[in-house]
Amino acid sequence: MNNKTILYFGLVEMTFEVPDSIFENIKEQDNCIKAQGIEIKVHGKLTLIESKHQSVKYDGKGNIFVFGQIKNFQKGISLYYIGEYLAECLLIEANHSLLVHAAALYHPDTKRSIILFGEKGAGKTTVALRLCIEHGYRLIGNDQIIFGLSNRGLITYAGTTKVNIRRTAILSDALLYQLFGGYFSAFPPSDKASWDDKMSMSAKSLGVLEYHFPVKVSKIYYIKTDHKQAGRFQQIWKDNLASLILNELLGRHVSGQVSCFQSDEGEYFSAMPLIHYKKNNSVREKIVKTILSTYNISKIVANTSEKIVEEILEDMN
Image (tube, rainbow, N blue to C red; front, side, top):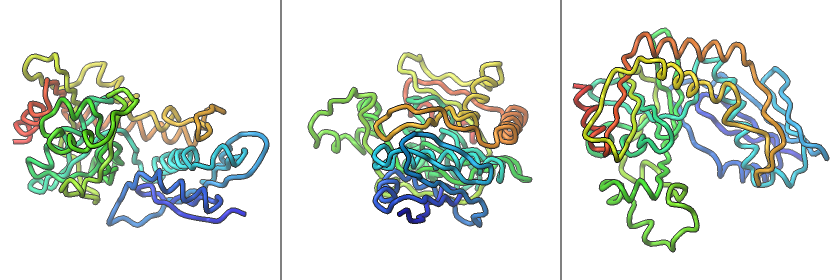
């Protein structure tokens, strides 16, 4: 018998109708994206139905049904990410907001936020930590953030504040080595490559202040730490590559590209059903157009996180 249990995905309340034992495992995957000062008005529901055949269906009314053998979903990993995907799609339509892979920070002096875009391994987490620890910024989100359009312009709402750090980043950055080096050296060598070997800590445990309220965006940066880069490079980013990357980056969740229907062990079953795609894609287009027409995105490339931070601070002043 299934029981109804709830998780919050930023601005969305998700009900999981699953056995208690599975929900406890689902909670362990929780990204804990917090949003404060906002009434939750968006609701979704995931129901697990035991079946010999694996399939996933959306009913068009906020409910997603997962059919399959219980053993494939016992760890809660797959069900969590299916629930997250549904929450993202419902959020876009209801609130004109997107969940994207980026970092966002709040500056107490300006009472505005900044967004850091960049590919995986570009240094977003390292730069965000430096801005918080050394320069008084507060962390809105470090890996995933919720942001979107309102009548006030572009707004950041919330994000993940759990800090996941790669061994490669720790070994190449003095601040990160000071914060995390001892943790890695205290454990036996991992069988993972350094790029994939991560450790996770809460922002609070690092003394980083957090901010989880809606705030208007003042600046957007696209950053990359490139150890072969000589000096610092910064320019206003308005070429065709900017349009392509923003369109792809902001559309990954809309088009189901970061989610698939699979078992906890990675056995692939199918793609996810598209949810309100036409409406959600229209929201994605409006946000991309707003960013490109209203914000001068600064592209910053440097060989260290310190130099990227220096460029951001100079630009903010």
